[in-house]
Image 1 (cartoon, rainbow, N blue to C red):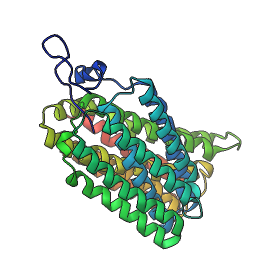
Image 2 (image 1 turned 90 degrees about the vertical axis):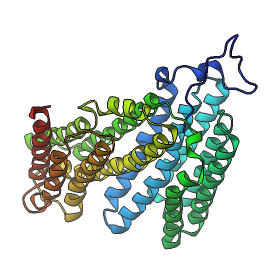
Image 3 (image 1 turned 180 degrees about the vertical axis):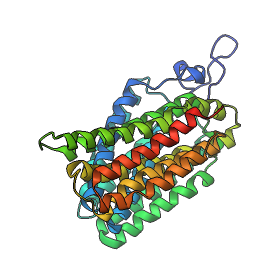
Image 4 (image 1 turned 90 degrees about the horizontal axis):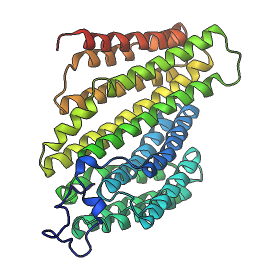
Length: 388
């Protein structure tokens, strides 16, 4: 949650006591993502990899439920750090040090993901509590009104307490407590004075775009893991290239028509209340769905590349198709909210991608991947060729 610019300190506008450094008060359009934020994002690469691997090894209802919940609680706080660095750029050594401490907390969370429901939930919970404490402490010094920051911090601490308690209890009770923490996230934006956290739209949109690129990197990693050390046959190379083609098509769906630049202009034109609530809908909830779609696709793609001429199990073929379908559906909903068109080609592609499951289970993995890519290519080509 972020602070827009105030009048530049000078002879006619002396800085208030306790005000943020002058570097924080620059034109919001000039705030760019810092190298430390990019470094911070490297931990999220590992998080997405861990979640994908966990899902691939437990590709059933229970495994999916666990990944849904873990991704939700992790993404809530990770996104909260995007709001934080938007409000208070890491321009001083104390800020950088605390941000790196939070980065360490996310690393421990990621390390504990594979066995979070089998004994590592305690480490997950305490690292999560550390992340919440660092975030709240830094936000308290960001120049935002103390009341909203206090309420936000206390509510996040309640969520962290549920995660910590669940880690000690394990099993179904653990899942239920973590689901309660997940549910609390929907209420928090309405329980704090959200307009107090003013956004710098350019930085905010750019940061979320970089997170999506990082998530696509997991799909590329899945291709490599799936191929392993097997011989590079023509079929394997073809499947790997087609899978990469699907990643490129999803990238194009997000970035290819300069939707991010439109999003910056659209959000900058809103008042604080509408902009912030829209930011929660699009960049927390909407991007949660996008990330989950990438994880599902990567989990299915890993098996597809490993066995290109063999048939896939229903779970693997379903994950591959569902990932693309969910990503397109979420992307279409976001574009509709931003007033972008067309929408029908992507919705049609989402439905057709879901229909490719029988190809994976009845023909071979290569056939399903090729069909998914063909559907995406047709939809995106139609958008490019249609009259403006």
